Amino acid sequence: MSAVALGGERTAWGGPHLLAGTRELAGLALRRDRIFLVIWLYALVGTMAATTYDYRHLFVSAAQRASLAHSIQTNPSFVTLSGPVYGDSLGALIIWKAGLFVAVGAALLGIFAVIRHTRADEEAGRLELVGATAVGRYAALAAALAVTAAACLVAGLLIAVVQLLFGLPAAGSLALGAVTALAGWMFAGVAAVCAQLTESARTARGMASAVLGLAYLLRAAGDPAPRLSWLSWVSPLGWVERAQPYAGPRWWLLATCAAVAVLLAGAAAVLAGHRDLAAGLVPARPGQVDAAGWLRSPLALVWRLQRAGVAGWLAGFVVSAVVLGAAAKGIGATLTSSPQVRADIVRMGGHAGLVNAYLAIEFALLSVLAAAFGVAAVLRLRSDEAEHRAESMLAGPVSRMSWAAAEVVLAMSGIAVLMAVAGLGSGLGYGARTGSVGAEVARQLAAGLAQVPAAWVLAGVAVALFGLAPRVIVPAAWTALAVAGLLTLLGPSLRLPGWLLDLAPFTHEPRLPGGAFTATPLIWLTVVAAGLTAAGLIAFRCRDLS
Image (cartoon, rainbow, N blue to C red; front, side):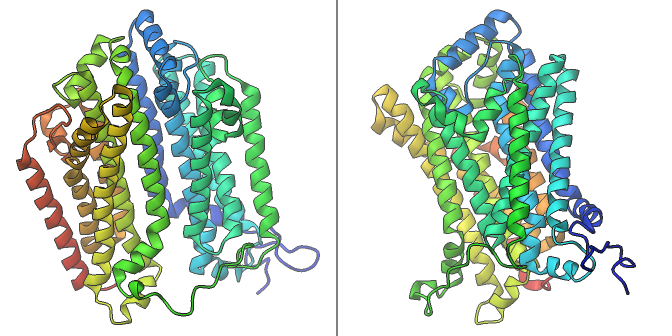
């Protein structure tokens, strides 16, 4: 059968056209990612919509907005965390609160989607199978970039529409949507380049995520220090901030972001043409002939494979906790700019003053992120099973329970370590500014550890899904986490009914520091997490590998 009959085009030298089959592969990618993309779009657009809704009701007068903008600009910790605020308009404050983090979310979407349809498919052998037909050399890369660019564009358009519906200026809303989409495009290009350098999808994701982390750290160092402002201009996330959508959009900067995205995509295509299928331009280092003795258990292997990722999470928690803790010193002046904010934050976070309430919300946010780590670690079980790595492990003298339990132990212990680090970092940051490091570290370490059982429950849900419903574990686990996080962080300010808030495990934890400590809910949350985990492991032992 000819290549034309298979749907491909032939070049003058008889091979398929370099982009033949791109449309079909893009359609396949959309079908595979229909749930993944919807979840990401919901998270990005929902975050911006919720922030806009809150700020419209919390900062009603121009005086309140001006007071908040002044407090932000005079607090280096706030600028380090979320960037500078450009003006005191409602749109400028919304951008400061959520714009950078939504852009980071779009960047992560670009990284995960591109790696999934390029290096991950290549590593699993799917692209070799597809490439045996009349599919061009660059079709998979082009399809991955096209689908990812379309998803980021839809996210940007939806964000712009939401802002317009809330009555914000049209030019700023369109610029906000554009800069969000462009953040995704740029890091999709970064991911495409990384996919050509290494043979492992995991390594490619790590490399691209490291570039994103470096971009965040560069702007975090440059934003609060005028003498180091050039660092922000080196960072793509710094460009996102300085596009300043609601303070005179810099369209030339948006054009620069688009040009960088195109250049990165072109560079990925050039690199793809200089390597063999399933190979990376950077050769993998051969491992040692003999493994160390400590690697002879499933738990040791899990740690060996995930130690780089755990180190990245720890670094992120340390930086975030120290900055958030240091910001607590000036939180009173910031929050009193709006009586409604003061009332809401006390309702959400505690009863012993605004600083304690702010710190309690900080730990609630970090506990949601720690739960995300736990869920991601548990999902490794499903990816190893689906990609047949589990079969290789279980073919040796390793039981199902010991193999799965190793990943669960890492997930649960990792959550505890992350929250302990959060308490230590926040205590150091706040204590260094108030002169009471010892007392604050002890107080906030206890507050951080009190959040652990709720995060364990979400990881336990993922384990239960792995055993009972492995085919839906990815969307179901992330949806459960997203719902619990939204109910915890936005539910009180939206005045949702109590029975609905009680669905989130984080709602049942004592609001520390400042609130009354009660051990009973922590015990029950631990019992629930243990029950879910046990149910998942037992179900996995009794079912077939899929």
